[in-house]
Image 1 (cartoon, rainbow, N blue to C red):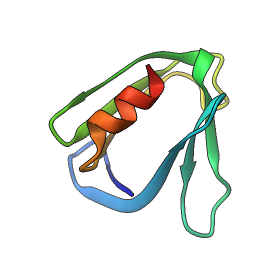
Image 2 (image 1 turned 30 degrees about the horizontal axis):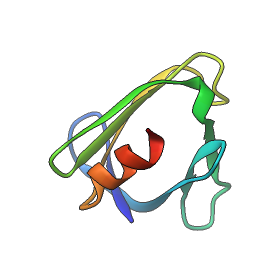
Image 3 (image 1 turned 180 degrees about the vertical axis):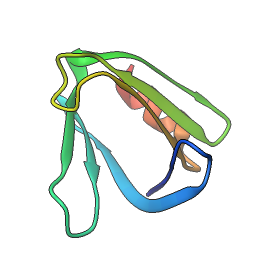
Image 4 (image 1 turned 45 degrees about the vertical axis):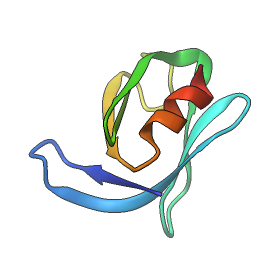
Length: 81
């Protein structure tokens, strides 16, 4: 369970991030899951309770930087290693 924030730093919603063998998947209530292929992630990291990743232009969402707050930010990072 993670919390997403908008570009102004305001809490937007609680969502779930899942790491599979091939994708990073965002599950959002009543919406289609968003998938980022792991091979298309440019970089990712964590700082305390913040997990951030950058998607490349070949991702379905296109390029972008995404930041989520969660207590297991380091665990997410380690799963992607």
